[in-house]
Each structure stands twice: as C-alpha cells, then as structure tokens.
Length: 220
Image (tube, rainbow, N blue to C red; front, side):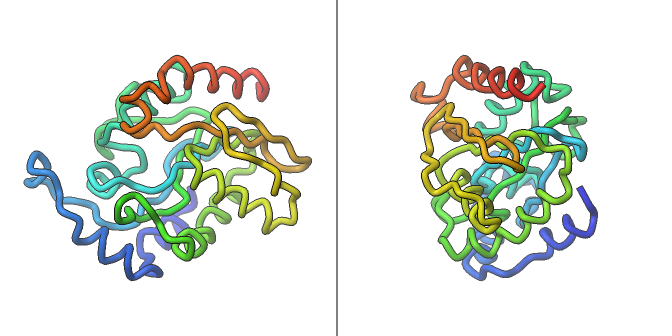
C-alpha cells in the first residue's frame, strides 16, 4: 500500500477517545515485557489484491500490540489459518510483523484503525476513519470482491457505497450473503472470527472455507 497513506494512518490522532485508549489499554501479563505498538493500524497484504477483507478494528492483544492487522490474537489465528488453506496466504500463522507472512490476491484492513474500548467504536469514529478506507479502495484497482467481517464492517462498507450514490440500503447483514452492484466489487458478509463466534460454533472453519470457496469460484 502507498507509503504516504500508511504514514497518515499511523500518525492519525483524530479521535481523542481512541487515542487515549490505544495508548493506555493494559496488556496481559504474558505480553508485559514486549514493546507494544499502540498506534493506528494500516492495512496489510497484496497491492494487486482482488479480494479485500474488511474487519472491525484492532484488538488490544493483537494489532494494537503487534502493529499489524489480524496478528497475534485468536481472531488472527482463525482467519490466517483459513486464508492459508484457501491459498490466500503463504503460511497458516500471523504472530508478529517479521514472521514472513505474505498474502496472495488478498488485502486486510479494518473499518476503524485504532483499538476501541470494549470493541465498540462510536459512529463518529467510524465516520472519521472512513477517509482511510476510501483511499485504500482507490489504491486497490484489481478488486473484484469485498468480504466484510461482522455487522459494523458491513455497515461501514455500505456507507462507502452510499457516498458513491450506489443503491444499497436494502442490503442486510447475514453470514454468506452476497450483493452485486454494477461498477463495484461484489460484497460478501461473514460473521467476525472473534472467539465469541469461533469458540461457540457460530463460525467454524468449515463454514468460513465454504464462503471463501464461493468467493473464489465466482471471481476466478
């Protein structure tokens, strides 16, 4: 991704509540000796990506600690394992920024670039962060599909479409749903790969793999 955009994201201080939280959120004892990132998180992946995966926001033990989206937490473990199985990643693990992970045809980002308190960004915080998503999308010209992980990411992408005057108000979030509009990538929805969903069986490897296969078959 373009360096100037990544720099702008990392330097962002538009949301005082998020700045305070990301810089002060306590770390777990097992990570206490590490130097934590505690800054906004830019996207990561293949600049020639045809699939964009849009998450909610960094987690405190994941990206806010490691400095890379979907890295070092249970959600990352689930997501990257399944992306590797589907051929989107060169390895099944995402542990830290120097672990050698490369994405293939895929780009990861989040609707909100800073870790929010209780995983719940405010509407104004989502709106302020939308400028970065808008620019990320312009820098991924080969996109064919967007996969929104969870309700908030889905709504954030719908807001992007509405700003472009694309009729999408009828789009409803549901795992496996697919929506098509002329001139923009296909929009898919999935439950977020958080432990709340993966530990309870709401989202399984099998169901997520089925969705990734559906996305691949329609795009390739």
